Amino acid sequence: MADTVLYSREDALATVTVNRPDALGALDTATKTALRDAVTEAAEDPHVRAVLLTGSGRAFCVGQDLREHAAALRAGATDPLGSTIDAHYTPIARTLTTMPKPVVAAVNGVAAGAGASLAFACDFRVLARSASFTTAFTGIGLTADSAMSWTLPRLVGTARATELLMLAEPVSADEALRIGLATDVVDNDELDERARALASRLAHGPTRAYAAVKESLRVSAEGSLDDTLHTERRLQSELGATTDHQDAVEAFTAKQTPEFTGR
Ligand code: T3D
Image 1: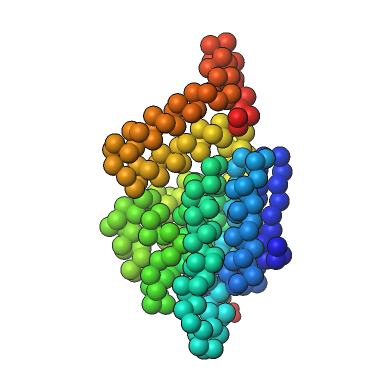
Image 2 (image 1 turned 45 degrees about the vertical axis):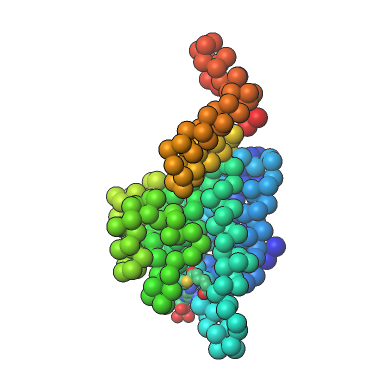
């Protein structure tokens, strides 16, 4: 894995850090490949029950490395955008949105283009007060990728998503909180502790119930009322047989705090 992405696991919490501070976390090919591999590892490792995604330096991630992209265009590369979307952006966005465990973005600074898409694909966004979002795509004559056309309207509604995508104005942390793009905004020096506390709480929660919440919300976003009711019924039946559910019910009746193991 390239050192422009750091991966670590502490107990049940995996941390993925985009680590190109000198390039504001811009995604060149090595970084995109490493990021894809890191989120896949976090998704597939059964010991991992929650994931924290963050950046280093003054940016979370400013999306595609435009210097690398400009060089590819100058060299006459055939469909460089389609190729990297297939190889990198789509797998990363799909893994973040569908992995059966919660993902918390600790947004430490500016998140632009596909960098903002990454944050929107997470289940929670804790923002440093100095952080901001910029959709950025139309500023360089592109449309959204990395599932932003799917995540953004679900977070803020279609009218606001249209405005954010077409006008591509920066959204401050406070404004992000106001319009539903942020879970919380905290002082810069508290970001790591506060985002980690949330992720750690989730890592010790009922993992299979969280996975079911993600799945049924995804089905409800894409499907009909009937699809949603069938999915809820199937997931609830499966959860009824889990150790976490059975132990939690026993704990409730005994007036004790449940301890979830993720099984
Ligand atoms: O292959 C494909 O292209 C398909 C995939 C597309 C996915 C995408 O993500 S497309 C969107 C790409 N991202 C952008 O368009 C964002 C471009 N950057 C900006 O709009 C601004 O830089 C920011 C709003 C992010 C930050 O503004 P500010 O004022 O804080 O910083 P700055 O002065 O603009 O930038 C600082 C440096 O970072 C500067 O370099 P320099 O002059 O110090 O040598 C700037 O060029 C560089 N930088 C910023 N963003 C990128 C970048 N370098 C490469 N790629 C970037 N995306």
